[in-house]
Length: 152
Length: 163
Image 1 (cartoon, chains in turn blue, brown):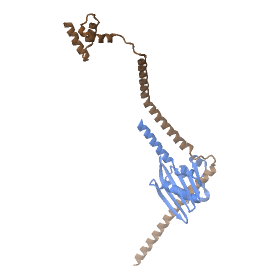
Image 2 (image 1 turned 30 degrees about the vertical axis):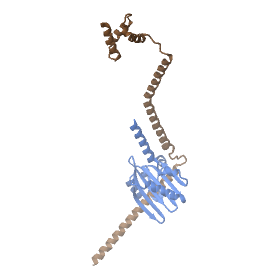
Image 3 (image 1 turned 60 degrees about the vertical axis):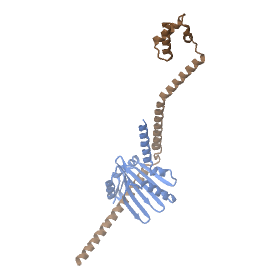
Image 4 (image 1 turned 180 degrees about the vertical axis):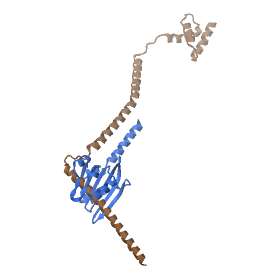
């Protein structure tokens, strides 16, 4: 019985720790805007083919389970940058691309989120503006490459 | 001292030392109920006469015995229930944790009552555009690097050929 209780407590603690995401942390921080788009809302979004830019995100969007977007400006940009640095500064995420242009740095990280799901992190930082996007779903790196080629 | 007295004395000796049998104790009691006991055993007769007289236990003793029995019964019930209380407490703790976790996960989930499909589309496109544009920039940088490397190698080869 004791072992069972300890096991349950450890499992719950691990689950709670895992669920304590950057997004939840940002939700409680004034000055940081957060947007969550669920799989259901993405499916309601309809056609994701943007003819003007020859973009078709339909295939990859169908594999997305959720989108988490956090943005901050001014003083709060530094807060979001710090939170993102702490959240993704581990071996779980691999840096795919890092582009530095003018005053903007964009990093793309990729990692696994369990249950055969992947997590793609986009960090776009300027001096006084920060945007972090988390895309979670069953998409693969190949799906990202395909979407990139399609949007050329 | 006759033989019977000697015999009773031997039985009394065993009785006082705690080694007598029930039959031997019965014989002693029967002996002292007779009227013509040996005067030498008068003190022993008095002892057995006193023991054979029924004594009424005082009421306080009854109460004390009953109280002790009741207390022991309560302690026994508590002892039996204690492990169950432990299990019930453990189950309650797990239940509280589960409810807390449910509230944490379900209650704090980002609510999206005001988001329209158009807004969802806008956010999704923005996120994927940022993703693909950045990846494309990475590709272009890679291609540029490859072209630069190729040009450098060709130039170096031409220089070597001229030599």
